[in-house]
Amino acid sequence: NAGVTQTPKFRVLKTGQSMTLLCAQDMNHEYMYWYRQDPGMGLRLIHYSVGEGTTAKGEVPDGYNVSRLKKQNFLLGLESAAPSQTSVYFCASSLGHETYNEQFFGPGTRLTVL
Amino acid sequence: AQKVTQAQTEISVVEKEDVTLDCVYETRDTTYYLFWYKQPPSGELVFLIRRNSFDEQNEISGRYSWNFQKSTSSFNFTITASQVVDSAVYFCALSGMDGAGNNRKLIWGLGTSLAVNP
Image (tube, chains in turn red, brown):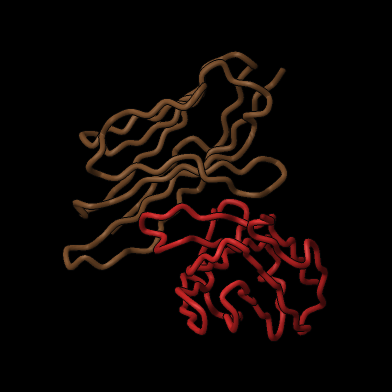
């Protein structure tokens, strides 16, 4: 099993450009999450999904959109990138609700917005 | 409100020393869960342990041990005989269920960066 994979691993964008981050998991997990990690801020939840076709806002959703058309994939989109979105992005999945289920994380995507 | 505090931002030890990472939490829920995750320099977070509020038994896994004390709202993590490979950022996290049985989102601490020097 590959677990959770993320594409791409690194990306540099100019302000105003758009991009999509792809997360894929092969564990048949229902729940998937997108986090951002910034120095001194810890992990902050952007959006999450409790199943195929569903999405919900997390702690810091502004400037991002997500889609979960297939159970194994969770896409994170930036429509108009801003320097404040420079961060490391992590995707995670869990079998059930995060309240009592461990999360499995991808390797991260380092995004720089100039 | 729920809160997780990891007061130690950075810790540096010499190999073979024992080290304890502190985690203090705040919650009014009677049912809650505590987690520890490890983030090595490679970046990927790895689950270490989960504890629920009804299980106060301490846990030992090899050189790792966890001390859960509800009386002090703490869930501390000890590494015995530390090794260079233990160098990582360690995160404590808290979730729970409110009085109506609704699941709460996971709350993350800011992490403790542990450096184990040869």
